[in-house]
Amino acid sequence: MAKDKANRPKARLPRGFADRTPGEIRRVARMMETIRQVYERWGFEPVETPLIEFADALGKFLPDADRPNEGVFAFQDDDEQWLSLRYDLTAPLARMVAENFQNVPRPYKSYRAGWVFRNEKPGPGRFRQFMQFDADIVGAASPLADAEICMMAADTMEALGFARGEYVIRVNSRKILDAVLDKVLGIEGPSEKHLGVLRAIDKLDRLGRDGVYELLTDGRKDESGAFTDGVGLTDLQARAVQSLFGIEVRVSDNSESFEDDQQITLEMEDGSAQTGSISNSDILAQMFRVVTLTGADPDCLRDLFSISDHLQASGYGTSRVRIDPSVVRGLEYYTGAVFEAELRFEVQDEKGRPVRFGSVGGGGRYDGLVGRFISQDVPATGFSVGVSRLAAALAARETASADDRGPVIVTVMDRDAVPAYQALTAQLRRALGDVPVEMYIGDSGFKAQMKYADRRNAPCVIIQGADERAAGIVQIKDLAAGKEAAEAIEDRAEWVAARPAQVEVAYDGADVSAIAAKVREILS
RNA sequence: GCCGACAUAGCUCAGUUGGUUAGAGCGCUAGAUUGUGGAUCUAGAGGUCCCUGGUUCGAACCCAGGUGUCGGUACCA
Image (cartoon, rainbow, N blue to C red):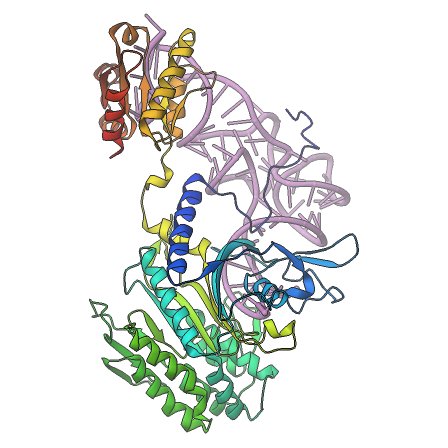
């Protein structure tokens, strides 16, 4: 025990990191297995890379950069080379493919899961260590690959238990953004303004259309009074940008079903709304109209038209994968299609406030990433599931799930009989298969053992004292049923005498079948 | 990084225009109950009142600086 209060370390966790509970761990493990099965069925194969890479292999933060620790956890090896904890699973894959370029089949379809780390300010539901589950196709330039990723993402969401309409995979293309911005801004290629516009659009869901307009023009003051610089577009330019990216596609309130080509509402920049049966082709037609109005080359829409066709051919309509011009994402390395998996339902947190989970995954085409390492262009596209956020969403929907359940506990009434309890525990464990069973191994009395069982969330406890042993029986107490009965407790003496939720079962010291049968009944 | 709020028991928080032994609820440990978690009653344990300095006869309270937490915002390859 630490007697020296002044100098003992404080038990604490760095911001943005979290301990994980039994329920979470089991839930995530089950989810990951589900995702894995979907990916395998689509013909993807597993591959794993380490948590640590050379810093220069991960991106723009080079060992000699001013602040090698900005955004990424980095440290120097004993040979002074900078190493980094990976911040996503895409950059390491690109490195791995480039390093083994001669040996991988192309197109190379692979998946991997693991912890990634970001050294940035955490927020609610955002951590500095979190789990991602990626699937990527390297070496396929065709929109077929993008369409496949989108469809598989939709399959994954449904396999995880999200009904059609509870989620949607939204798709857009960076090429359209690039082409239209070149025209509107009058600047070819990437620029400060260009980036600023994309960042502003990316905040549409949080700030709303007016907030985005402020960011596009003169800047915006947030609720704490801090000021964010605007991009400095003219009113005309800002409105031109919003005419394309401001097309909001939302499910109309009276839509009960989530069939394909459902009733949806298109809100136009001029404030009008058009409601009707709208398909991805309809959305594309709308985008085509706006693109040509800005004078941009409509060829930028080619990929999305192609993806739309492939989706339709495979029977994936707007209820699953929907083209949406407001998707921006991952600003730096995406070169074409971009995807985002969005949850469309709300849940309440423990304080009753509504929580929107929003984006739980995303990805896109990154044709330049592998090419950074070798003198060859290698097209690639992929998708990443934010496992931690998804798990939080699933947990918030479920109440008291089996994931939280503890073991059946054999209590120790008299210490002298421990060998008999051990025998009973071993027999029961064998008879119950995958149901966990344990004997109480602490030092406390019987009452404390019941508290322990309660805290472990045990489904039931096995009780055998001298009386029971003499009579050839054990008591089985159903803790959950007991808890329910306890709501009506008035007088303790009566309550204890009645022994609610407790049954006697025959046990001769060898045959646990009757006990096992009763336990199974309680578990079911 | 910028803006703001907050910092008292394990948790949620009260507190005094600056005054002596710093409180509540919940939780925890135990007793009432030789063998039953959750009800009730009782008792107990648990605090450098974030840190440092200043003002004062006297600071948990006022002032300054620091640190930390939370929220917003920016960045997010």
